[in-house]
Image (tube, rainbow, N blue to C red; front, side):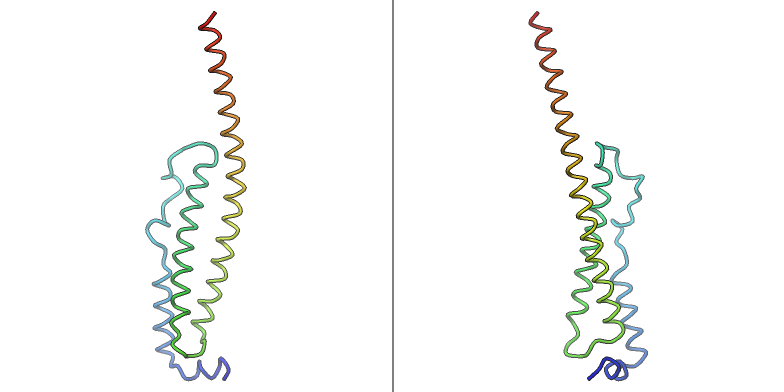
Length: 134
């Protein structure tokens, strides 16, 4: 039986109730609303990493919620609310993937910067030791 048949079996009130529940379940948490200005200044890329990590955490919460909603079909066919939930799930998975890739790229540059700082510190320490021994 097609999607239209199952949707016809549900009344508009049921669809509206389920859609409202979906909207409430996917509302951002307070953590996800943290403004960029609140993130403390840190080494290059640290702020971006904190922000991206918060965004990934929120997306993972949404993915979990959407997966639970889609898994609770109890044998009924997919209707418009299920289709919307599936589309949101795919979009969130895509966002997690691209954000994770960006974080991986950022981690490489942050490690290179940390290594350069460590090498510079080693040179400074060696210079201080040489000067104190002279």
